[in-house]
Image (cartoon, rainbow, N blue to C red; front, side):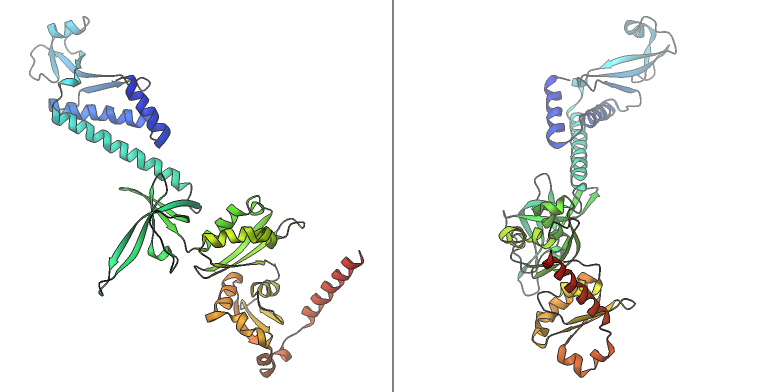
Length: 384
C-alpha cells in the first residue's frame, strides 16, 4: 500500500486503541470480497499482505489445463509458461490481479467492509477501556436528555446521556438522585454500575444514587482510605438526603473519622458539594454490635442498647428529649441506622421503657462492666 496508510493506522492504534493488524485484516478481506463481486467468485483468490509495510498483492490461482473451459480458474500451458517456466499440466500458477480494474460497486463493498471492521474494533477498544472502570468512579459531561411525554402533556426526563470523553454512557432514571438537576454541559462524577458488550456497541450504565458512589468519592478524597489505613466498613444512603458511613482505623495513631472529615471539614465538604449538599454522618465502626448501633444513631444520645443476636434486632432507649432526633424526620435516622448495622432497631424513650417495665427485663451488668473498664482506662491515661 503506502507509507501514508501505515502512518494513519499507527495514529488510529495510538489514539483510539484500534489494532493495526485488525484493520489490515479487514482490508485483506475487503479485497477478497471485491474480487468475488468483480470476477463472480473468490475461492481461488489469494491476497498476500505485508502487515509491516501495508503492501499487498492479489493473485488468482489457476490450474494448467489442455482445454480452458473456465477463464477464472484455468489457464493454458503456453500462457502458464509465460508466468512460470516450470508449469506443467495439472500444476497451479498464480496470475496477478490489478485491483484498479475493480468496478465502482466492488470498491464500495470493500469500503463498507473496512468501515464495519473499524466500527467493531473501535467498539471493542471502548468496551475494554470502560470494562476496567466498572464499579469505579468516572467523570463525565451531561450531553442530552431523553424525555417522555405523559398523559397530561408534560415532558419528564427519563434517561440522561453522559459524555465520558471516549464514549457515551447512560444515567437511567432509576439511578438518578430525586430532585437533582442534570443540566447539559455540566460536569459531574458517576459510579459505573455495569458495562455491557452489545452488538450495536458497548452500553455503559451509570449511577448517582448508589451508596458505592459515596464510597468511591471518599476513596478519591481521603489518602488514608486509598492507602488502606482507614477502611470504610459500611454505608447506608438515601440519595439526595442523607448518608451514614461507618469507618475504622488500622493504625492506632490515625483517627478514622477525623481523617474522613479533614482539616476544617475540607474532605467531607468536597464530597458533600459533589452530591449537591447531601448530609453525611461519619461514625466509628465497632465490632461490638451494641456500641456500633449507639454510634450509628448519632447525633442523638443513647441511654443503653440491648441486642438480640439471634433475631438480629436491638432495643434502644434514649432520653425523652432525644426520641425525635434518634428516630429522625420521617424515621430516616432509625432507618439508615438499621441499614448500616444490619439490625432491626426498636427505639424507645426513657419514660416509655419505664412504663413498659423494660428496665426490669434487661441485664445491665455487661454495660456496667464496660463503663467501669472505660473509666479505669481513662483514669490510667490521666495518671500517665
